[in-house]
Length: 224
Image (cartoon, rainbow, N blue to C red; front, top):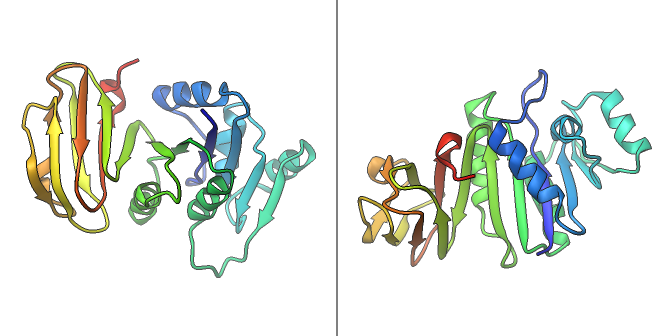
């Protein structure tokens, strides 16, 4: 399975990966022919993971110049965008990822910093991909799984999982393998209806007829 690993930017400070995100990075980076893309200061996370990106994109307003120079010297391609732009650095990085038509995209980002930035990260990873790529994101210690039509999600009995609509209503949501079942229900954005559900077994399915939702699982609830 062709894989692209995308590191999102974050607030200033020492970069850190949660244990779950570190495991996701290790698994993704071990995939044959993996492509690594960093969005601006996401380069710090990539470097902390011991990886040199193939591409660094963004307006470079938060990445340290010495880290950027080190990546360029190691062979990374630098795509410098103007600060006045209509897309976030992560959106630019995802656009770069889609150019390679990967089958799987893994996004790694921080859960620290401004709330609007965190919501922007969730919105960016939830946007429908141009192809059939499966997207998995780690936003700090939370795994975020976008669902556009149907997705199977691994869990453990009794573990916590939440479903949130993004960008508009999620229409006709149906679930199996969860304690509180949805059977053709609609979820509106920011509704608490899909919060704090529980797995009844080791697998659940989530499907919908229209819209987008994200499945959010705290790190401690993610099966290893």
